[in-house]
Image: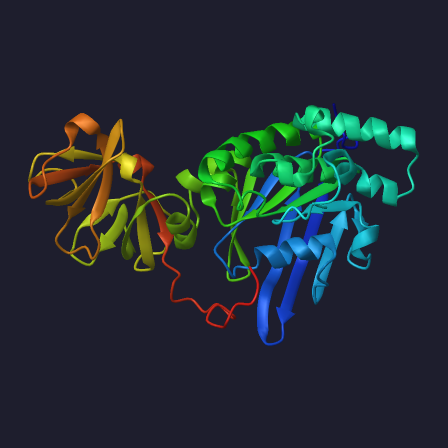
Length: 372
């Protein structure tokens, strides 16, 4: 069953943010955000606490008024419209279900508030409950449901009004790990069946990477990178993204011909276009490293720890001249003993070089943060 409107044309993004900025007193939460989100896209806003992602979501919903910039939905300006007049729905972290109402009454509440006829309300509520798989729980109250079921009721209440855009603020944070993993798949399925655009805010990279078609990584109120989950992991464009997404060995040095020159004189091979001598970082994912005999490979060191993870293990190697142990992922049967000497063979074709911009000035980054 499809709830959303017809897909907008490929040349016209559904949601456009233009130079969006916002401050709380002297603290700037958003710095000139420019972003396009397509129709029927599952889009995630990802970042650490205080990065501005919730401020951005609340600005789209109409609960915050940005100091500067524009918000356009299908080409029409939203910025001046109050929240209740926007064709946008928001699903809150707490779900905000009415405990004294049944499941069907909770889902019907918004339609009844709009003055819809009883027959239409009954039909649309039935369709929504069928989509989320809770038809047989229609007469129950929220207190009689599991956390995952309550999450689905909140989602049904949001999609039954057929908004152009559904905003979700940390929708899975109240669930335990097992249910959260199940609901990640469920949300993606429901988004596809509902035929509408989802924009979800989360600080959980696994959640964003498993559900979203594209992810915007925010840091200190700025967009670091907007890309597919695969591209964010395999081709980060900044040191922050490389460090925040997944696990990576970050080798800091300076850009040189053919790679990154480390302080100990070694060169980590990597293709790049950075100016010679610029502060730079080689990004090496643990699975792109193979163990070799002592004294061979790109780097050599001493095994300091191993972590068994089932079919694979993570091995930490202390390399002279590196401040942190170097990690690699190997098959469980190949795990060397702690204290043994090993070589590390780095896959140069998969090594990414990025500018080391940690010293760059970021207005507001050192100030107290007031909103995530």
